Image (cartoon, rainbow, N blue to C red):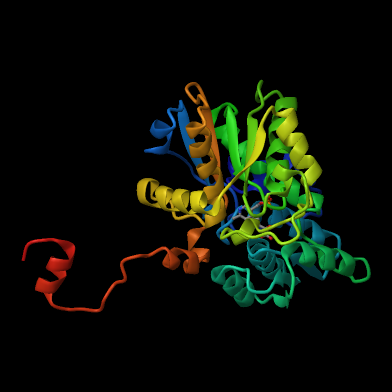
Length: 355
Ligand code: AN7
């Protein structure tokens, strides 16, 4: 496979990435994720088109893999023996998978009680050393940053610029597939690395003359964890979307730049709106995403309700992570409990069918 046709980002986009002759080009199959068109949402908001970029199709089930392959490859190239991250879950799953692939040790610091079960299971099985702290993600990141200064480990949170460079390839793939930039890029915002990365990607493609116009960047936070929206740190962030339960985003400034320079917005949606959108894209679009990914969908529905005119707008929503990671949330909204019965007549009665 020659480099331009490879679906693997380090090869396909090497020109745009900090790759040298020494960078190991290993892969777990990250990138090349599907861009699928909406069945119901685009009609409902009356848009020209709505696409979902299915980042849940990455090897560990989230968009973090794009940034992690780059960050861990560079850590390896620079002689690191171990990587460290703070995480709301997906970063830890991805970091420990790529550390395993490259033969490095992985260490993760997580807020106790607020990590979806599937993500914790991933970090455990990939062999990470996990420290669970009595505090938030923001506390975890502060601790991680203070520990790297005096230890020979590489921090692989999105404050590491290699993470941003890897993640910007999501923007490249969208443009390569649509042959243009969308009008609106819709994305959940937690630590604000991904909105920063996409904005960087679109700008680099504009500089390379691959697109003329940049998209508006529309970010959505959960109402109980919306520091950028209220322009103030949130000390005790709270939301069902634990992935974006973050009160002091590391990439706050660059998220504001993406918002303002793109003529975009960063707004919030409630947990109720998130759960509604979470179920809606599962039942109507066949996409089982984790709750954080429903924030931008909920955001589009909210903007429509407020009267925004999407008529000529081509929209891409980034579906950042898989719903399988968070079975507790999925099961908590199940109202009709499934009883264990075996009689076909009884089953037919429950289903309102003939027997
Ligand atoms: C599914 O894993 O912060 O705004 O430590 O897991 O780039 O932080 C995850 C964040 C969106 C927000 N969707 O992205 C972590 C972590 C999902 C996520 C976000 C996260 P950023």
